[in-house]
Length: 463
Image 1 (tube, rainbow, N blue to C red):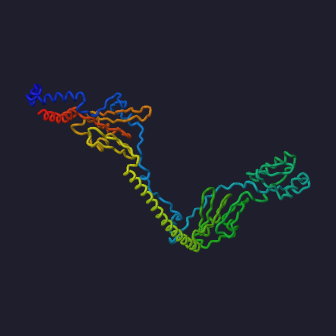
Image 2 (cartoon, rainbow, N blue to C red):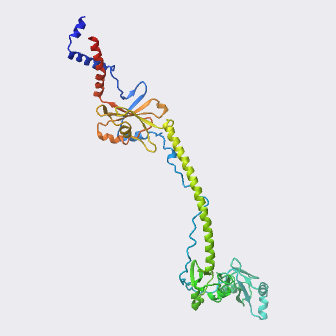
C-alpha cells in the first residue's frame, strides 16, 4: 500500500524520467530494440572480414569471378542474309548500242641492233670440202656422214656429232665462230681441216603470225632479214573486211605494239618493219558488225534467262527470310514468357538497410552493374536522416568451397562525398548484398518510439 501511494504521489515529470532511465537501461542490454549491423570477426553463422573500399581494394574486388548470365543469343541474332540461289550476278546491259571505235593508235616496235645469225638447237649444218682427190681421201668419213644425214642437226645440248671427231658445241655461235671451232677439232684429230660450213635448214629461230590471215603459220628466220610484209605474204595475206579498223599487233619481249592496217598500206617503212626471233604477230579486227550483232543477240537471250532466274531466287529468298524471322520471334517470346514465370536463371544483387526501397536488383545482361547502380537505382538512395553514409557495405560470400561461410564486407565510408566516385567503379557480383546501416540517433529514436506505448500502458494499468 505504501508503494502504491508513492507512485500515485509522483509527478508526471518524475514518471517520464524514471521511464527514460528504464528505457536506456533496457536499450543498453538490447531487450527493447535490435538493429542490423556489420562487425568483423566470427559469429554463429559466418566469418566476416571487413575491408575498406579504396581505389586499390576496388581493383581487388573487381577481380572476383563474374558468373552472371549474358544476354541470350536470340536477342542479338539477326535473320541473316539468306541464300540467293540460282540468280548469279546481274548481267551487263547487252542492249547498249555499239559505237564505232576511234581511229587506232600507231605504236610500231622500236628498231633493234642487228647481230650475226647464231646457230641454235634444231638447225642443220653441212660441211663441204674441195673436190680434189687429195682431200676426198682424208675427208671420206666426214663426207659420208654428211651425205647420209643431209647434214648435222644441232641437238638439245647444242652440239653436233662428227664421225672421227666427236661432239662439237656450236649453239650460240656465228658461222665464222663455228668454223673456227671445227677447224681446231679437225687439226686435233689429224684430219685435213680444209672445209666450209653452211646452214642447210633454219629451225631454231622463228616468227609466228595468226588472227585475220588466210593461213596462220610460223616463219623461220634465216641469214637474210625478215620483214613484216614478207611474213604476211607467207601466211596467205590479210583476211579483214574493214581495214580501217583492223590492226597488226606485235608482241615482243613482254611489250605489245600496234600498227593499223591502213597505216601499213600507206607507209612503205611500216611494211618493211624488221622482225626478230620470238616475235608474235596477230592481225586483229576490232570492229565487226556481223559478229557484234550475233554477240548482242546472244547476250539479250542470256539476260532474259538470268532476269527470270533472279526473280525466282528473290521470291525464294523472301520466303526463307520470313520463316527465319518468325522462328526468331517465337524464341524471343518464349524466353520472355519464361522470365515472367520466374523460370529463367537470372542473377541478382540485394539491397537492404536504410535505403529508400528494400529491393532485388537484376544484374544487367552484357555489362556490369556497380554499387552506385544498386544504391541510386534499385535502392532509391540512402534515406536522409536515418541512413549512415559512413556505414555502406557490400557483403560478398566466398566462392571457394573451402571457405564456406566466409563473408567479405567491403566497407564504403562516404562521409567524404568524393568517396561516392568509388561506388561507380565497384562492380557487383551475383548474390552480393548491399547494406546501409542506421544512424546511432535513429536507433535511440526507435527505442523511444517502441517504448512509449509500453509506458502509456503501464500508467493506465496503475491508475
